[in-house]
Image (cartoon, rainbow, N blue to C red; front, side):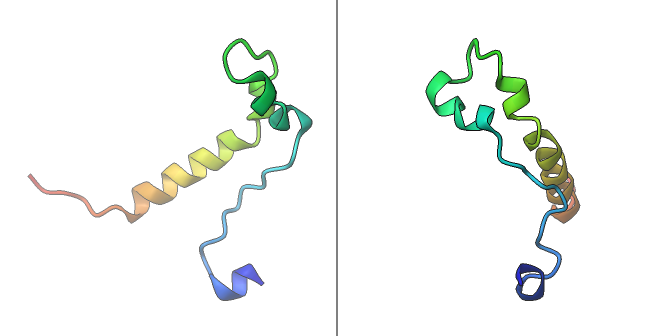
Length: 62
């Protein structure tokens, strides 16, 4: 349904829910041994987001 209403706005990256991600609110980021595991699915999303933003930005001329 989302694709029908907003074509080309859906991201290709799928972020799955993980227990380690939910525990970030309790354990925090610093010194958290689970941090990399918790954010595993977010790294590809951020790369996809950066790619989309760079494609949409008009180039400035100095």
